[in-house]
Every structure is written in C-alpha cells, then in structure tokens.
Length: 124
Image (tube, rainbow, N blue to C red; front, side, top):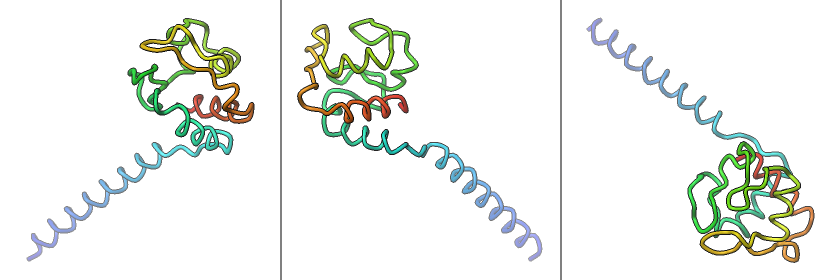
C-alpha cells in the first residue's frame, strides 16, 4: 500500500509540474499589447488581414508581416523598414506588390489608425 501511495504522489507531482510549466509557457506567449497596439490590431484585423498574415512570414495575398520590424527591407519595395516607410506604404499603397498591388489606405484610415497599426506591427 505504501508503494502505491508513493507512486501516486510521484505521478501527481509530475502532473503538477507539467501544469506549472504549461502555465508559464502560455503566459509568456500572451504579451500584453499597449492601448495603441490593441487599437492597431483591431484596425489590422478589419482592413489588413484579408491580404496579410500577422503571425506568419508566408505570403497570403500580400507578404506575411511576422517580424516586419526585424527585417532590413520591406517586401517587394525593398525600402528600409522604418516607421516612415511603413507609414508611407500604408498610406500610398505599393504598386510593386505581387500578385497584385497594395491599395492606398490614406483615405480609408485616419492618421491615428495608421499609427496604431504600426504600433501593432512592431509587436509581431
């Protein structure tokens, strides 16, 4: 009977440790977004996600945007990844986009929306 109790305690300890590791891993993956980035995520989901993956670098219709601000250059236009260049590309679009050009969003999104999208893109 003591052997059974010892094995049960050990199994429960392993389960508890596994659950603790899973909780820490889950918490690390759940970064808290700033209010600007949260707003940018909403704008992205409504206006950009049709063509761009936020969590992948693979192409959807336009390029995936995971790690955009860690790249040296913007996909297709090959301009340096800077806030100014990303803002301009969102506002004016990109005629060099493949398989189709990126449309301009200056008339569809406010300056605040664009700034918030950029804040969100920086978190990807």
